[in-house]
Length: 212
Image (cartoon, rainbow, N blue to C red; front, side):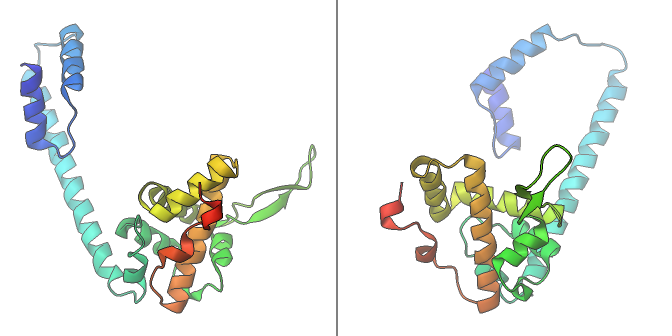
């Protein structure tokens, strides 16, 4: 097959397909690979089984996502949280699944504490009085908050501006900026859930004299 034929085949099966460069690379690898002429039918049968398992997993995932969307409709403030650009239904469901009713938290810091993202004093035989993240909380909640924040940094103009301001103007390390943004996200989530208000981008944006 020619590279353009390979790309055409990818386009017919994949939403995001590689380009000609990958097609040339694939052909070069194929030319150098060691093939086998034995048990071809068995290999094809095994490949068909793997593809069937993949299709089943995709179908199950779609069913789970549909169930998640239906459950989110039952939560009064969920739709207002989804108005935050960059927050997906799956990431929000993960946060709610691990944290429970966000309106029950008194403040965003309570949610951080529940996730183990609050600061605590640590010590050992070699060192003491060091301030670190406690990590005494729900690890999967920490993961969902982190992933949601990373998505906001890439897709949400306000979070993107704050991160840029933290790194470029305040000379803050990227991870420290991310942790501060996780705290901001926690406060926004709890605030919207408690007050049942819509997301306000103007309240999130950095001040004009602090913008990057």
